[in-house]
Image 1 (cartoon, helix red, strand yellow):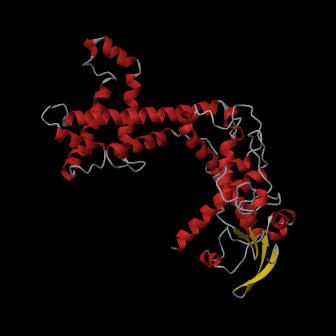
Image 2 (image 1 turned 90 degrees about the vertical axis):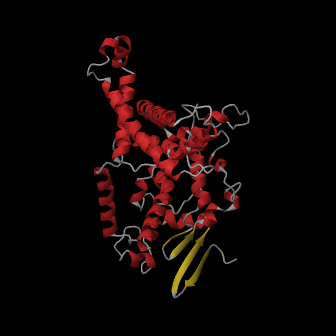
Image 3 (image 1 turned 135 degrees about the horizontal axis):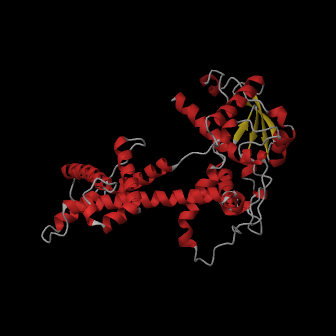
Amino acid sequence: RHGNVYSLFLGGRLAVFLHGLQVIRQALVTQGADFAGRPQGLMINHVTENKGLIMANYGPVWKEHRRFVLASLKTFGLGEPVDPTSLIHSAASNVICSVLFGERFEYGDEIHTLIINSFKENAQVANGAWAAIYDGFPALRRLPLPFQKVFKNFDIIKKHIRGVVEQHKSSHVPGDPRDVIDCYLDEMEKRKQDGLLDEERLVMLLLDLHFAATDTTANTILSGILYLATHRDVQDRHQMPFVMATVHETVRLANIAPLGGTLVITNLNSVLSEGPHWERPCDFYPLHFLDDNGSFRKPEAFLPFSAEDGSGSRNPGNRIPREGGAGSCSLGYEEEEEEEDDDDDQVNMNTSAGAPGAELTDEEKEIINSVIARASMMESIEQQRI
């Protein structure tokens, strides 16, 4: 109605609105340096006392802080190798704990750490030579050899689980189970005549399930990480075109920040939801980012939050979640892989090694992830305000 470029007063402040792909690309890419600043005098500026980085105006102060942030993140390990063993064991244990006991442990909790370490020690002994020695030489079983540690660890964990069961008995409401313990107590009450269920068997059942779920899940994930680390060729996210397409489609349709920029406001909703550029603009449709051969492609109209002129991303925070979207999505797909494997109707996305895929530039990678980082930082500012 008013064209792709028009002015409007927001209160007493004059603003210029830009709509459509060509106009916004002209402003943000072709003349990117002219639109690199941020509006001043807004609520966010007052909240941050004009000392924040997100809404800092383009200039020497912003450049120096951006340089400092990127260098500091690298110094303190961003992108550096880490040992995920403890974290993965803790996460796997907490998942089964919530099912068995109806509670989770804080990471670093002393009891939880003791239980996990006991599981790991017992698994090492049970799968090693000392277990074979114990089985093959009965005369040695009472000697203070390493296999005695297994019994000590076992007793410690059983004592803890017995305490949890006693707590459940005191707060248990028949017919209203909170977890596996409550279900067992209900069943034990129903079948108390046959004597097949009792508290000692419950303790052993809980211990077995806790150990099995923690050990097998954690070791499976750790094995996957090991194979990924030693087979770099399978780490290329561009050989997972449908995963990449889903990440991009999520960013496009979510359109977290449709009004970006300065007093010249770029209405990115007009780009990310324009019919001519998207087959189904209002639907979640990852095929927007796949070509006819099933390979990943980035349409010209994909401008999440803003675009850059090639001088580098304005927001250094986007270095943190660079691979987060693709990694999270790929884990979700992996869980469903077995169920979908036999479906003849599945689209062939050419995900095998060596499949063709569009190679993104560093500029494009930063653009893809900038909306995620910017949203996180804005949320942090909002939490501080609250």
